[in-house]
Image 1 (cartoon, one colour):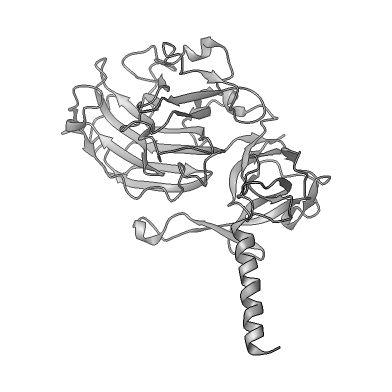
Image 2: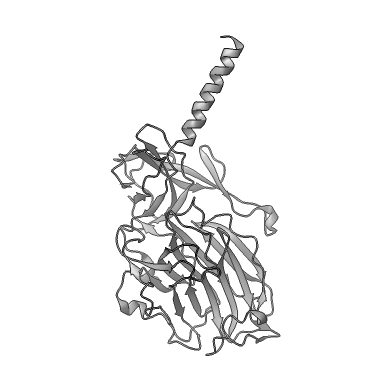
Length: 424
């Protein structure tokens, strides 16, 4: 072949490849794992509160505030974690700051009546699942959740652990209301009298981006108060099971010890208001004194995918899913997915997270919205090559891709939607 002809052939093929990528279907996600086993939270003595928003109105009335006077602040079936049940809708009329949320009080909260009245909690974890619609607009509403220490019936606060938005990401914004061993705030959100302890860096995971919209995402936060008189307090954030933000050496309370952490709020507030009318949803809310982690699934979990999306005029074809386990290092076949503590964060040496595939599905038809992880529907590999199910107690991540009717495949999604397999 003449050099010019060879060049033209390569250019033509490259053009076809680029056109194929450009016109390929959008990358799908696993929307959620079907909750086909009872979640263990209600029977766990470490758990202060669990709400899947499926129960009767009496459960909602256990909150200090639950917004029943807002018709838009409702539990809905249209969006829910898994195949059944309800979720809490957080609604944003166009231009509004948002409607919805829950205020939970417990322990030594000076007003209430609180749950587990009189107990003092100095360390706390709380977790929710969050979903934004696929056409979510405007980045992140400023407030998502917080824990706090109320010190009086006037809602004065000794400390606040904010989980807030920063553009499309989440961030932690811890604050102290203590000076010289006493509470100096005079009301709720007394910002001039709060000492802010640092809100950077933000999460590398862009929760409010178009890439992550349209599916359920696991968000967990952790606060540990400092030893009185020392600067050893902690605040951490995990998204989809991976550590995102890590604040250390915090002085939450100086030498103050009269009240511990005694409230967690789920919030809606968007400082500048929503650009359009839209909603997001919260589900599977857990508050605990110990780490919580992702949802619990069966040994044959059912993976429910997001709807097909592709170029205008295209039609859905087959789709595939994979399941992976975390491995300790860059073993053969492992894939690096996240560097969760980069050196420049200044906390500790960077630590890589590696996953290795243990199950791959067969190509599934466009009409199938969910698939069970089984030998019938795919093949097990790696550490599970001789097994026919996922291991009890193991934590796994998933990913997927989709094809259109022309035969073009999307890229694989990132690894997401972690799940813990139920123990016997």
